[in-house]
Length: 506
Image (cartoon, rainbow, N blue to C red; front, side, top):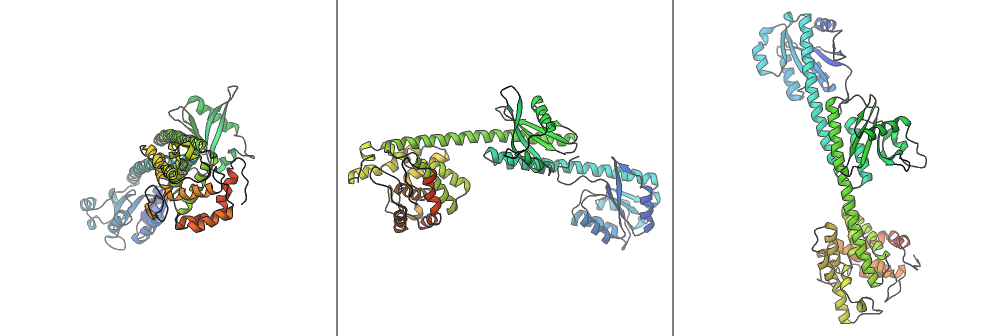
């Protein structure tokens, strides 16, 4: 049986005999030598004082029963040991049977009321038959307590595992998280494999392996990967055909689907026979995984849709301003790079990358004659051009979606200057949003190196000189320093996303 609490299933019931008379140890072991409970024998541990008994409890976490003398190194040594076991060590699982040859020293009624024991026997009345009955009853009670505790811990682990899985937002991380938690839940160190059925052109079913651990890692798609063995394929096929989880003596296949009826299968090898309760826990886990899988799919679709909308809007603006399509891609990648090195979390920097293509959305409201004018703008044209910051913010700020709202902030803030000389609000220093400060650098860096209707691209040394000059004026000093620290990476973005006719002079 798999112990979902994380403790290995023991091969014998551990019985601790605590008595200062050697003969009591000998007779007890002799009488119970052939004792078997639920297919497991007894393992005898021997302590001749309360002090020795404490040593056993500090070393052994799974003692099932203590046969305990009362009078040993002191008249109350046994009773004091009960207190230490229950209150100091905190072990409330072990069953404790008091055996005393001097009942006057510890009256039964007083002891039962005051101490957390499970039986009180006088040595003179404890015949072989009564000892057998006492031990059998105590072990049955210990077994039931451990089942309750194991099931409680197993349920807690299912809840913890599915909560952990819910925190993963893409399918690759999701698959890895599922395997990690299944392996932990069932203590399967040898391997777990995650696969989805694929319909072939001729109606055959194959299995796409998405993740694997342990021995099964060799089946992951790769140049030197091995094909799934026939036995494993047969088990996966059976689970797929029956649309249910199946269990065998040495392995099982967990089956679950999302609301789109997309199936996922987990093959778990070299497991043990699961109890009914453990099967219920595993199936509860699969149900929660199905919900998580659906959330992953929906979140991925939503993020992909948002990203597509952002790029469509950005490309529409680029086509009006006669700028090339890869400008916003380079700005997005550089913004992400600067954000990560500034200290943004992966999530924050990823959102900045997705939102940054919207920074010039407001140009949609600028007349073509001004937007694409070769040469410098006059004062009035410059005033009109500067309105694009507020126009973009006005268009986007009504959304409740985080990416769109960040896009609104970028529209408004990416022309603010560190010294307060920018527009539209003349903000200074930390008054400017961090996202706006980052995109300001990313936008100018890429624009200086790009061909525009009013200028030729600048060479890298002139771009660097400009940022040195504007450090602490247009741009936050810390961000300029980060740009210089990662200059080669920033310059390489033009090679990764070149404009038509680009000539790289890095």
